Length: 173
Image 1 (cartoon, rainbow, N blue to C red):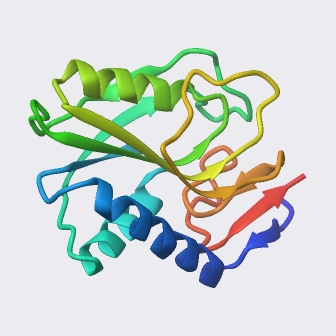
Image 2 (image 1 turned 180 degrees about the horizontal axis):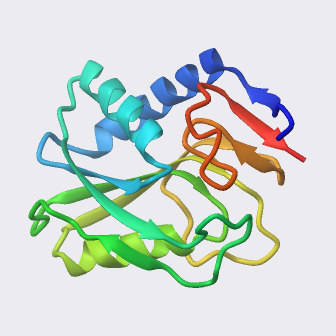
Image 3 (image 1 turned 30 degrees about the horizontal axis):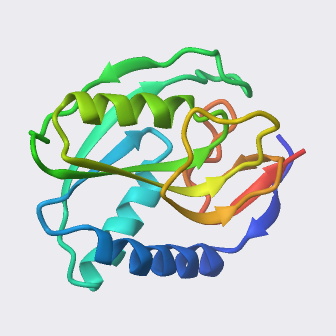
């Protein structure tokens, strides 16, 4: 596998996470449940919840494991729930966190599941928003970076399970 072309350095990723936390903090409270979409959202969710904590927002944490890509580079067109929510959401605000929005399928399904679980409000936050030629099912509430239409890796994004752990965001073209 070729080395990725660096698009955002580790330092720039950290700056964007801190800036996004500053936008999100006034919209939520300490009873908010941060819902990380596994697997890719784990890196961003970890950094974002710590950044929110530095701003005095100590959110609760939960995760949804959704799969719509498998090891493919394109969405399979359906979303499978591999692990559901564990924390009660009834009457609470939920902050759904994912690494990237491409087709919008996973984020839309997560939003539906969170609402079905009784969340009073559901916000969505993604690190990267990729351009899409047709309307998505959902528009994220908070976006750290408007990404180019390239195959992204690093910071949770992968190529068949590899390169998720890169501390920067790169492209494989």
